[in-house]
Image 1 (cartoon, rainbow, N blue to C red):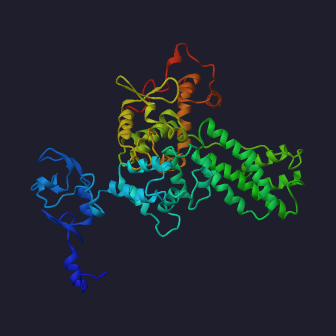
Image 2: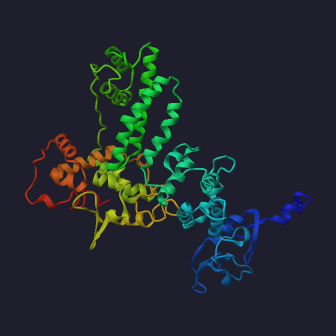
Image 3: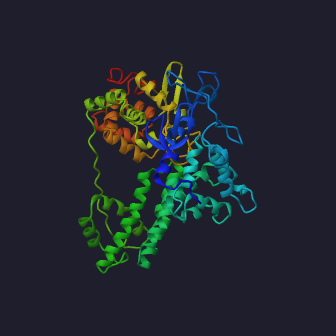
Length: 513
């Protein structure tokens, strides 16, 4: 291509100017009624939408009204150009061929999902519709353009799907690399109904396992670990997924069991021993050398090995030690609650999640599974359904909760366009990761485990244990243990209290914060 300038000075004069909006010297995107605009300010302006104060029409508002700088439409601002899509007529940012972002995304997806006949592969039409319907199509274009230098980027995977080079099965996606791109695409296919829904963490484990087995050099060890994973770890993960859902900590612990089982077999090999000839002296030596976490992770493997006669059944596994983090004091709990209700510097989703922990003693893994349907309006009262009956939400918390629902994160892409999760995640159809949310709460000064312990103990001091267990969704065994630790008994059940909720009156400090 022949350039239209000879020197850097000519380039500066022809293509660079001081932006009338931001005042910086940048590449010119055009000349508007108020002067030259840069690309950044132009993109931001044409994406501004609303009711024009000049003509009252609902449209893009890239112009600025003289005097007060209020955004107005192109007609009222006196633009000599329009921003209407040449195909659909939508007014907004225009790309090649004067097409809007949505039409451009539609064209690119049509080309990528072509089955070789000039049409989208029929089985992938639901995926196409899901992607094109995203609220911010620019995010979809950015996703397609991501990592273009890598051989297995999103665009390439979509193209292979369209041509039928990738089977529409979960097993096929578990073998693809890079795994993050493949996992995201797999979840989009599940959300659109192209693939059957499977727990994402079960998929994650099945994707990780072959790579781990490939890293083991001893063929006998590979055989043993594969049997352990197939007949012990995977069945329990599948049962958990069918019963409720798999959390990141459950998925991580399953992988740790495999890793420590592998390490134990290698450790036996270094002692010129094998699993079949393993003795009690070997178990005791491993226990003496390992951390408490390592002992906990190996316990399932040893139990399985003894049951399947892969090692002597006479072996004895030392008892497991249980340690719990100390709960917050009541003053610390109330101080944290007051800070969450008043500190606007903390992101609102963390404030809401933290309040649910501090008031209702909910684990973060359960909080992320709440949906907006669990927030119930009963006249002027707002209720949160955690168990039966639903728990009343005090007024300051109710306002915060409703504000969060109206402004939830991760709702503008194809990932969760109509999500009902109270805390939508970045992955298709999934809520936020509980481990990530817990880490953010900890950074905000709310240690979730210690805060939950303080909240449940305070509830049990004030209300009968059966009421607390039913209303907060706790298992009676857990609540019995906790009430014993607080010095009470399960039978402390006042007459007429069976309809009360743990927050039927505002918690001490909640209304004063």
